[in-house]
Image (cartoon, rainbow, N blue to C red; front, side):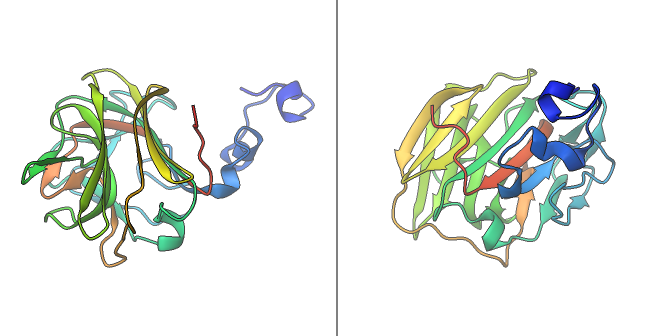
Length: 230
């Protein structure tokens, strides 16, 4: 609820999503925003979302709006075509963030590396992975990327199960920062020249046939803005 003083309105009112820029000064830089409140799990910014398997809106858990996206079984995930102009992260400031409610540890092991499966430019059923972000099977928050070899930034702090947690990856200047509930938990410089692949979609909820277990709410990608620098 936004008061007249907050919004310039003449009376207290509930603002529609079309007025979200009143609350978010960086809304024009947002390249993906999924509130997870409608059955189609629509992206406010117009990316076409495909629901695969049993991924669905759920009223069981939510951080905002009464609903979230529920993903639990292999074959349940969301995709949208990968657009470099929206999702390449290394050439500018960049932020990926959402709330997650994990019901079980998520991720997979590729060789000796623990990989996240929450969101990334990677194949849902193979090890092809250009970048990925989210918790791993060890509970740590991780961002991985490919620059000719696999690179990673990983926290020592772990993410609790069965509780809502805000996670964020911020690329600011020449470094990557990972936040858990607003606390800086890991950082590292960007190594080499990261890559992406438009032949592989942006996938939410699965990688290498390993699934994210739980609920996701208010997933937002902002390109050109490092929303959190402390």
